[in-house]
Length: 251
Image (tube, rainbow, N blue to C red):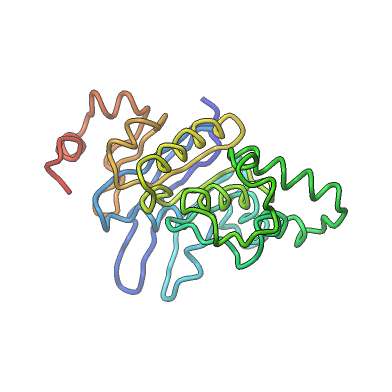
């Protein structure tokens, strides 16, 4: 199995609270790895540690290593901005930039020097097509993005992330604010995108994890209890704590 990211003995403290404890996880390339566990177990902290967004919070201390391919993203010589380009982040609540649909997608490429109009047009159309949004918005690209439905806004935010050509997508409960139909559309989209991107997704919904996960990591009280192929973890878990969580005895 081709491993895209490797987390080794990752520890995170927020003030005096030891949030993540010696976390070691392998993330396969071009698969969907789903991080599951009860509320407050450290799932979102782990996700934000994978592209160093965690450093934007106060009173954070980090020990351990996170490798993308062979590069340790916590090496002091690494360009954090470049890391966050290669490892994109999709938030729980879709928040488009206060500008047009077109400019939301074009914003990142412009920052990185793409100015030529024809190339920008191709980039915007390609990203919107990737998320299944082009046919819905192609005649109103100059409309404020805030006027889209919430499901469309989430797909636009994913398109905006794809526009800077990441290799990994981190998704923090990307469907929790959506209606069931929109949530289903996002699930289908992620399953399509994994052919081009490595996806790490946090979800509080076990049913969703069972539907879309290729690989699973179960976290409890900041520690990895069990990880492996989704079918194995869900149908034949090795650890008693995993069995309890899957049965709904831990919430």
